[in-house]
Length: 361
Image (tube, helix red, strand yellow):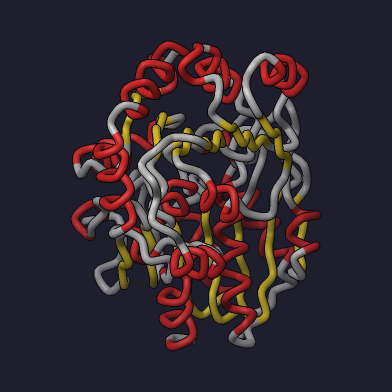
């Protein structure tokens, strides 16, 4: 079975789309599939990392800094070119080969692009979170809590198979293994993980969260902070870390599972890492860093599965500090978050998706 995956990462897009596609590709390759990526040379691309994981990558040209085009899609600018150019360049990169599946995970691509690529594949899978555009696909995956076929009414063909919810979350198998070995959490907050994704973190939410631990009641808490290679505030972060308790700063880890297992609480964004935290029952204080994260954040908060602090523009270090002090004094609430989030994600989602793909090649 031959599979092509079209996705991108950049300082603006972040790394989540590529990383979940890599997880899916790894699982497919274990079943004997050949997987190849097509990515554009954005600033902050992960093509070298994809190659280091054993997958071939076809590189699309770096977009012009002065590129100008019109589109009705909210995230069209993420593509760097118009969809017609991207479709033509993708077809050229594929050398007119025919693939069993084309998997597209990109907020800037919709049914027009997918239809144009039909000649290169037998079937198309779209991975989406937004439900804000039409798709011409045979399989749709939306792994977010609260997603349903009603969200995509009129946006996908009637015959399209739809997979919804975090039971299909594309997590590395390591998370399911760690989950099975996970010890019951103590209810105390002695070690905290701070991670706001592998992107640039332009508002420096990482630094803002770290400053929250400078009050005397929180100074003894151990901190693990993970930042991406494009994080622009590392020198400042190291300075602030020196004034806090025991703090370790990590860059470009292969995964977060070990840190999550050892943490009592996580502070981070409402993106794909949400499902990794849930799988391991890690209580979380969450900030939505993009509008597409809002529905899942609100839904999870309503289920007492996370402590939702609000959208990024309304959060300050004081917001973090107040919530930390409250949770530190309320182990029962911390335990409730842990139990409620853990029941949502079993870590076996990628296997369920692969089973479908392999059964319909």
